Image (tube, rainbow, N blue to C red):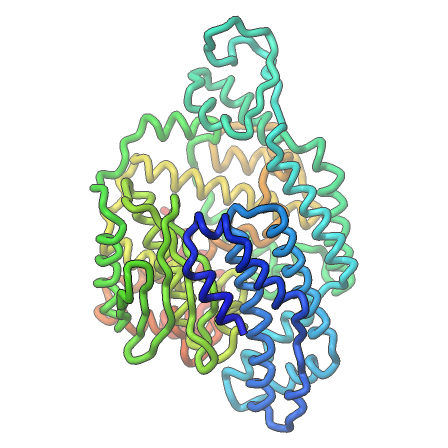
Length: 550
């Protein structure tokens, strides 16, 4: 169904994607009238019904992935509106499907199947059905969240610098107070300003720039989500969201965050710290040469990358064709799914962007991350779309690709030097996410104690901030991920633990097969038991991660 769209889509460069409206118009013509037809699942055979349902759902999900692909580009207002209409239309269509009585019955039937793939599909369907909200709740949440994000992005926001000494030198005479927009220049100010107290004052003011606009809206969002959780029988929204995760309670998440809390440079000092630190020594390299090095390392896992032409890679695992990676120019290495690989249904397609030359450690690491992400999307061993995209939980689904990235980095990059620019940046980024994760968790539990979060801020940055709890108004992760803001930290630390525990083993292929392919469709707990040789609890993992921190 999407063949003609994808053929056009994948031939586009960034420039042509911005200029050409026709592919988005074609996409809208297919997604806006799209309907999931379930007549075929009336068969008495469970396997036949599962395949029939997959054929219907995969069309909907392919359209959704195409919408997400286009959203990364700068496009005109009309095309943005078309994509938004498509997004809402597809979400409504899935919601209609989820509320059909025969789907809930069928998901239960699948869970009692003799096929592991069908059992897992039934579990995923049940999770999605249970988490569906009403159209009115969706509309309310979408409108509120959009307003909150707009206030954070709004370029006309400005700060008032109250002290003349905190103004940067300029050619003209500066007034005692100045209204200066900092949406784009805050980083430059923090690097150029030599007075630490001025940097602290401006950084803290910047974090609160959207408080007045967002305070009432964020409280309203909290109330809506708390009501949603109460309707499902949960104490609060944090408990509701975490119930299906590996770290299945706020207590477990806080234990993990406490375990990795450490000292990092203060946010208002990080620019100066990075400027003074030396980078980890590394030679610039052409991206195509670096990719060739990655392809060579992947051969140990029986992964072969075939260059069809300069813009298209064909990816194989042993004798199985996984799909294709489409290369394009971009400022930052990143991968974007175009079509998910599903065994027996379709090959995968991924768009991989990167610059021509990787000039420093960070961009080389980013290309390894992006290629690992691409391969993870192509190689999953499930027979259904939902198995290959959702995983057991949102806080475990990307562990495999993080492990592969660590494996490749260990082969291709030098070790980060203690006290280097990369070392400071990693420590700072980690602790900022730790602090924000604690904030998000506390907010959605309704427990924002100012003294507690002033203390938590000082634990991570060794500096005080009396208004630390007001950082809830400073980052979109409060809105997008909420209580799940911790999930990337958890998965990266878990991948690091697995990598360190197994890096001296001779046979890495089994680990690759378990984490990346999972053809047997083991649960994540079963995967961990296979890797560590015995059942592993989250508390044990947290203890091991904490031990590794010291």
